[in-house]
Image (cartoon, rainbow, N blue to C red; front, top):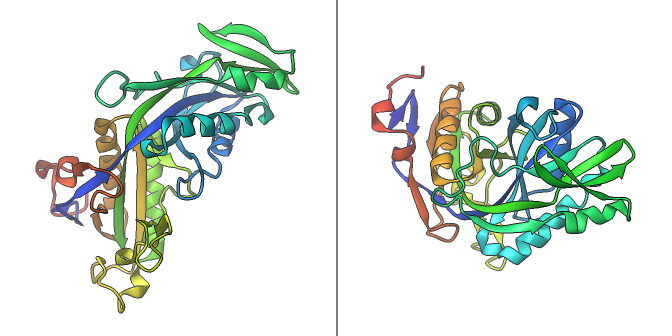
Length: 318
């Protein structure tokens, strides 16, 4: 396929089911909310942490329980980790919330983009956050209600912090692209543009908490070190072209992986489409595909032809 001057391989994205806790953080200002949400996402990649952190987007004051600027972010992990392990990792991560000046935390499941009750957006669990985080109050915490939400009010040094008593865990999905470019700079520019576009325009889809949204990817297990959980995905590494059969086009010299997590398969389709649009508008991007691990990562297949329909294909970059 050819889309706006960029070649799109006629293949599928291998997706896996993901537990998602969608959270809404508010603070005294938008920049503070963004900074604190990113901090909570923290060291969040399932390769080396028990939980992943991803940012979705900004929520205006008019749509938050306390009338303050907010940001929606996700804490998530593949369902293969197990619900009990995910619940523990979620509570461990949220236990640091009272350290964050001026912020409050609410369940973000119903924020724009949610599709709970439709397909794979079903609620898998309800987690009692106040039962653990509320003990930060050391006996000075109190039950409260904010914007119709039942909360625990904790006195912290910048005033009172509100924590919603429970948050829901839903089941969503992930998706990933492999993007080929003429240079490292083009890879980074494209990933940054794709991440910015999704955060601004595609609710229900989260960009991983990496510096530009994209990463140097990995494969499940290893060839020479089979006991490792992940290793380099050598078919996409340009400097080993003379040693392995790579999937890199002759006109590309760098590759970046662009992963997303979304509340549903429809949402991940919208997110991948927005990402492809942004990459296709970036000078130096020559081709896009999706990795396949033979079902080792996820058994759900999303054809890229369904993400970029044939009627949208164009011969030149717009």
